[in-house]
Length: 125
Image 1 (spheres, rainbow, N blue to C red):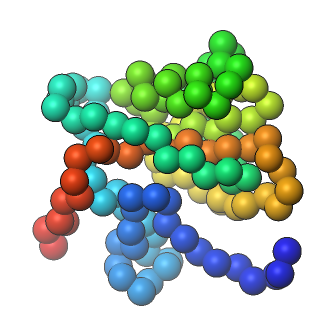
Image 2 (cartoon, rainbow, N blue to C red; image 1 turned 135 degrees about the vertical axis):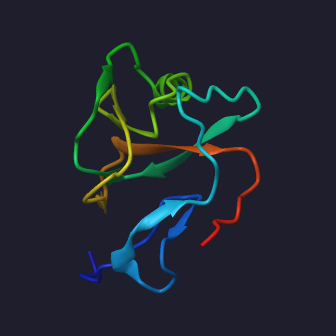
C-alpha cells in the first residue's frame, strides 16, 4: 500500500455535507423499505472488489456459492442494503456500513451494494 488514506462514498452515495468527510455519506436515490413495497422501484447491484466492512450481518445465505447468487439473494431481500461475499458465503447487511477498507491482492472479498435503477433525487434541505 502507498500509506495514503482516501475516503470515498459507496457507488450512488454522496457526502451529507459536501467537502466534509466526517459528515458521512448518504444515498443519492430513493430506497423503498419492506413496508413501502413500491413495485415501481427496481434495484441493481454495484460490486466493489477487494472491499470489506465491519462484519455486522443480519443474515447468512449459505446457499450462495457464487457472487451472482449473493447478488440475487440481496436483491430479493427488502431488508438488504449490501452484502459481503466472502469465501462462498453471503453476509447480508444493513446501513450504515462501517470501517470499510480495500484489501490489496485479496480477490475473495466482494462488497455488493444495492442501488436504485431510478434516476437520482435531490435532497431537500
